[in-house]
Image (tube, rainbow, N blue to C red; front, top):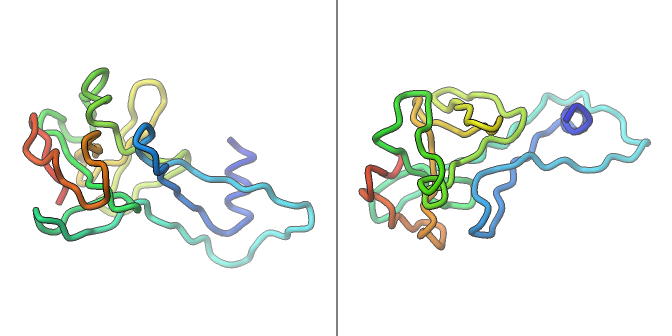
Length: 149
């Protein structure tokens, strides 16, 4: 972990990549191998955020960097996820990369098993397994889940 964090800092940038396959949702840190000839950057660290606003048939919502809709769960108290087991299979958490830091209303919720999940205004964020393409919002209003706005 320290080696990955050091490599990220030395590169002067952090990159969040969201896997494209349906079995893996969320974001992970992507490290890259550095040659010994690379010198530390003096440029300020730039962070790529793993979310964006998109326009859907439900209006403007939050999505991951690929454009997949993000959802909140009405049963989650602020700052805590209650979606585990079968719930998390149907509603995969929007994982935060190791070392990710809160940004404004975007915070991090810690899940069991040492995983971290993004939250917006304290509400943990999820994907819906039946959303198969960017911009789909098939989970809005299903079982207490609603698109994040």
